[in-house]
Image: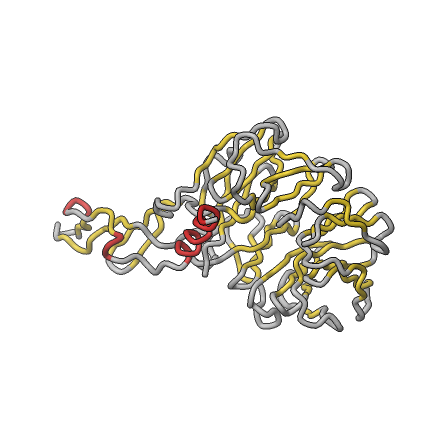
Amino acid sequence: MLHKLLPILLLAFAGCTDAPSNDQIVSASTADKEVDANGAQTADKLTVRPGRLASMFRSDDNGRSWTPISDGLPENLAVSHMDTLGRQIVLGSNNFGVFLSDPERQSWQQLDTTSLPSNGITSLYVDRGNIYAGVYKNGIYVSNNVGKSWVSLNHNLGGERVKSILRTGKELWIGTDSGIYALPDGGEVWRQISNKPQMRGLLKVGDNFVAGTYEGIAVSSDNGKTWNVVNRKIKPSELSVVDGKIIAMDTEKGLEFSDDMGKTWNPIQDGVVHDIAVLEVVKTGNNLLRTQWDGIYLSQDWGKTWKDIYHFSYGEPFGVMLSTGKQWNEVYSRPEVPFLQLMVLDGVVYGATGRGC
């Protein structure tokens, strides 16, 4: 059990470190000193190991190398969810609300925090220009003006923790700790359509709906009127659909897929550590990419075999900083802690860490 908890403990420690201190200095020499116009030495130029740097990265080579893109993001941002709004990326976080990228996805702006509680984004969903955000113990909010303001959709919902959001025709569905609720367009009363506990994913696959719950995989073929638990062994932390196949990310079993609507599951683990939690899986080109606590893996044969292409070291610095006097400037950065989220947009892979406190 300890070897499973160790990466989590290391991640938490990495996220809560303070600003660079004297014992983090890597080098400082006479050659590193600034020289003014008269030849006099001025402030030291020091390269240091910083405690925290970028939260967002991009990769143009399918996850083999990464470039930081965190301009406008807090240093200790803990990204919890990602979605797209046209060519822009929407970020939900555990500690600073919601952010939106520019169309080039290089810089970020924080969306309105006065009308949206900022105590943890538990789900994020973009549909038809509307941004929906589940907030920890505060239900669900929506913005129809690109995050300039938010409106509560809680109505009779109470303080439910919304873990998944899905639009189905003229209704909005949410998965919560106590089941699935539906709200018709223009309505103000949520109705419970399933009491399956602790929702961990909500998908529409063809004409069916699939839910990952604490009890197992539940499926509805009648628009949510009835639900059947078709497999009690798979209890995923996340669900996704790739090429029509349902992928379950399981903290104990690793990665498995189903092509019969969740009844049977096949492991796709060859080449990876089996007992390390899978955090996210995406398709990039003809390949599958997965992130987990120890690193990033690439499969070129739809999960039959995997190759470790990037290793999270934990012990190495997040990057290099340059100081001339009191001002510090980032000159190099790399992701040291795991990506909790992956996304592919316009052929580019984006990764988000969860290092913040």
